[in-house]
Image (cartoon, rainbow, N blue to C red; front, side):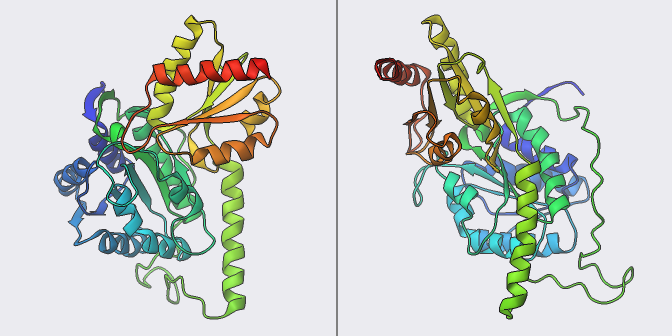
Length: 357
């Protein structure tokens, strides 16, 4: 199939269908409304089910039910809507139910704005619900990458019986780009059969029970330790990142999603001024990539975390650098987008300070 021009929100919906999702539960919220509209049209065409719930709380519990029956389920929302889902997400993790959750981020806190943001990083990577849990969190930088990641997200969810979150932002959801939705897929994963699913007893003995309640402390501790084994394996096997122009970079920016694309433009502008600048782009926000910092800490002068927030990912950058080099921060928030010229001005100020140190 040739590339087609699609809005990001619509492309992620179609990519989910091609990945086998046949159930979508959601509630309208800007800037992800086009996903809801697209799925309401497309899912009936492929024999799927679209249901607009009465609220985000209802929608996430519908995901619990359909996912518990073994179906591939997609739910999307934007920042305040994801906040409303946190209890349900914690239940889904505790009950070991696979699902894919997409957050097309907007400004906050509270109702905030409908403009693009990256201020839900803590919520996604630290767990917004109760209990000890983690989810693989993936952050694409383009519509094509968002479509490609969708298949992987469902596979990871099924492999680990754990929800996976895709972190987009309002700009990525609303922009239009050429996208090839029929790119050759990677080798198909050998996924475990869903013998745990609540599909009746015709094919197994006994009852399958989907549950996150353990009244015995011993039983709950064992459950948590079993979950932790999964998270430890995810942390080893699901790390993804891109290193861009880092070989001899004096300043290495760290950015994800839309912001990473802006930084790449900044790198080109910096080169014209003789400044060697590179980029580490985490694709997995959890697990956060440690390796690119170990590869560059002895070579670069400093790191710069660039975000559409007041500074959240920068904490993970500092943990990864572990005091080996200075870590600075540049951010815009409230729906404001960092501009290459302003990032470059910040880099130039950093260079003055680093060179004089």
